[in-house]
Length: 316
Image 1 (cartoon, rainbow, N blue to C red):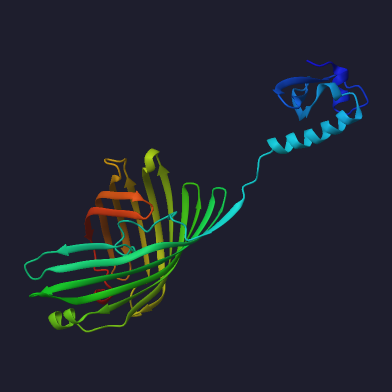
Image 2 (image 1 turned 120 degrees about the vertical axis):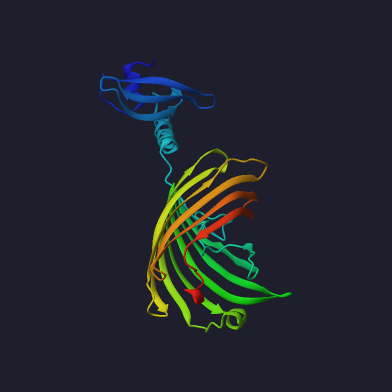
């Protein structure tokens, strides 16, 4: 403990303030000692300082004291978060809904029946394009692209029944576990020769441009485990045929469990939706395993179930 006189001389005060004292709190091997000025009567922290004890009574010591005090205050002050931007980030802050039948993904499925065997395929992906981050606040702009096809076997050949295309621009705003997705997208549907010849179906002009909103909350545990709840709605602002409904809403849950092998995790997803164009309540679900070795290899092997109206545009 240093005396009261040295305290206010050290602080640069000419008048005596008897309630102030100086506490030595931490030695500095090179420069002397760290000190903390504290009003002992009010128990109020006044500031930090760093100086050499032998120089507290001369002008050089006072100059060094003031410089060191400013340096120490800057060192202990909280540093504001700095913003950063990045092109083509390797990870998505919010991916497409796993169970949604119109989520951009790469998938392959076969449907066997007595009448005809059907091949269902999808080629698509969400690609993060631009990230801007400030602390826990993140904005990510991406691109959605996808195509869904159905082929039906006719003898040794497969005929194209339908082909739907998706192109969208999703923007995700995330703060901690909360995320909000706003997307503007286009879907067009085309009828193939197989459905025309086999079912005598006529082609229609089917196209839609829509805006969709989705909010999500994530619970993340150790080892990249995840539980997510989400809900959202969409509105079609341009539609052909014009007599179809334009509103839809959906809600769902996704769970990714702990590892059962080096890069294998159990996964479960379910989504319920209402679609005004078909006036139906639809239910979709997935149960299986997620294979994820790194950010570029992410594959699901799942049992996929869907109960609801046909989402292919030409069959709505």
